[in-house]
View 1: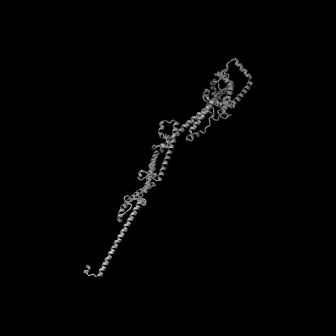
View 2: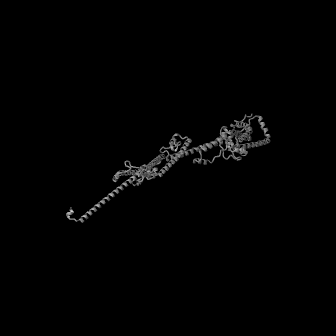
View 3: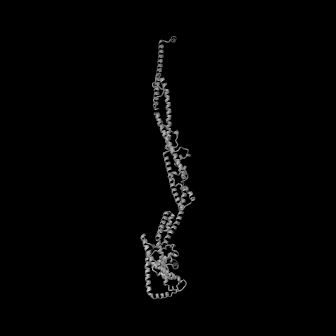
Length: 566
């Protein structure tokens, strides 16, 4: 209609219609292409969603999602709308599972770092790598099991560290040491005041164990020292009868004697101060013991010397006195062994003295008889013995008793020889008297006596007329004027110097008997004189002592003399 009014020709009309047709076709094509593209995109989205959904199912270890149909139907949009919620659910599950994995793996890394010795662990720099291809519950459970194992190991290590620390506290308390310094020296984090988690690495545990073992060894060493000191104190106390009040101050030391190292736990019971005090006390008691031991040693040595001197035996040889004293002071000699040795020597000396007693009694009688024999010889040589003077009758009586005693000497000597030989055979040793064999003394005496008898016989043969004069004087019956005068010291010394070796030896023995042995047969014989053991050595008796012995002998001779002659 419009074209009619306008006057469009047919050609223009056809051209416009053709253009409109072409434009419509172009729009249609575009619409169709857009629809195809949209359909393809929906297909792709649906495929990707299904692929992602399938991948999520596989990574999460699940077979399917509850509520989602196995086979999908309907348009693409309907199918896409149907899978989108399930896909969103799976994505949410994946994120939750990832967080679980990150948490577990992060804890594993942290605990592993602590076990490795990293006391300070920074969570902010933690880079936990989670394997998204395997987010299954099985894998998560494996990580959780590993985490639990590490937690248990951490707890065990913490308990072990605490046990070590408690042990160090106890041992340090017993030994009197500062435990905090010892623990800090192992590692600063172990000190509770540090405020940092404790290092529980293998190296720290090894150091703690080494420290504990070192303290235990120190404790055992200190205890052994105190055991030794306690035993020493007990022995010294018992030896010296120390009163209880003096022992009480060290009762804490002796109380440890029956305890083992594990049983000692009191605070400060094994400190160095206690050990030093005990050592000082032992040293003091040792010095006191050495002093008393020296006194006891001298006492027992004196007892041994007295026994040997009394029985005229040789004193058992001892090391140098000064050397023994030095050994006692230094403690290098066993005091018990020394005393035991002296006791054994004293016992042996007493036993031998007992076995020599019968012989020694006869030796003493023989010595006294020999003294009377010598006095009688001197008296017989005195030309003034018959002179009338005060006390002459006493000398006559003594001369009569002396003759009786002298007549018994051969029997006494023979008996003494027999007993001495029997003693020597029984003991298989020589009977010594002041270091000189007694049998030699007796043999020499017999020879000397025989020589004197022969000399007297010759003198009697030369002085036959003098006997007739003596008989006439006895027939008259008058009392001769005897003299109580003792021979002068010069005369006595001269006679002894000219005497035989036996007389000199016997004079020596009589001197050693002393005044007390003359007055009482029960008195002990005096100590052995050094340098008088050599046979044949010339020894001069003291004139004053010999004269005194002659004066006192008369009072003793009656103890073994016979009846007086008429």
